[in-house]
Length: 361
Image 1: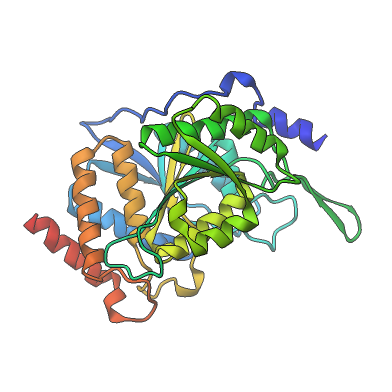
Image 2: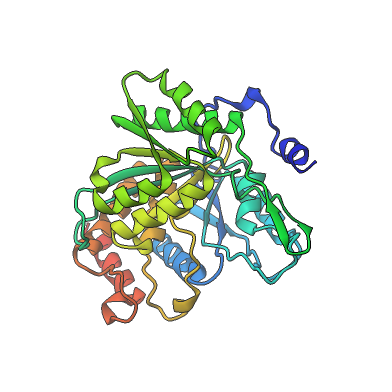
């Protein structure tokens, strides 16, 4: 019954298997775009205020429709409002939304509702070594593609008898083929040479078989596979061996956090969730940072880079280039550091330096 309900809700159909590349919504109101802004929890509101202030200072032609999502509320009205706003605008920029485990078991993760309601099936994270950021490994350049709507995060969980909980891991052929096709298509588009499927041999046979089927249609791209536990070891040993990686939902959660740590931390890496019709931009790792919120020390780099990805998606090429240069310059000047207490990490200093650079540029 749980599986039948899941398939009905997700419109399980072969007709949506190979989707056309998502076209951003056209500009409105004198060449401006409206973007849904979800502040989220923890450090999300202050970092997104940083983005709004920078956009306003640089005269970026984007208007934000702010939709607040209360992670402590049992009602789903707020997340439904957010879904409606994204459907209206086509694009969103969001902070991380905390999952409140004190609510009843029937309460679904706000992040999960957002991804499944909009069918944001591909989570994409480009993890690369950054100039001016000291790390153990150099020359890292990996694209992680994570199936975003099923797996262990399908919200199909119940207590069979007292003390025994069943959680269903859902892997479907249609969604596995879809994410594999996305990975290989992106690899070809970006001039990449290899796609690696991350799996667990005893539980991911269908996913792996779908990756092999899709790989047969891309003879110009090398395909290999690796089990998830070996993946983590290989990443911390020699991350340069990886190019494009595709994997189910849970493994993507683990691998993306490992990769973020390899290039300097969660405050440096942006991410994006793509569907057929919508795109939601955020930081690559889903941590609210509550322990450092409201102290003016949270690193805004990942959020700023996510906003650059959003502008590029909206075809603001020149503005994207300029803002990305500002962020890159500040990283090289060590203004964006992965620390928690140094005065060099103060967001006011970063904003001031970026304003000066934008005026000079």
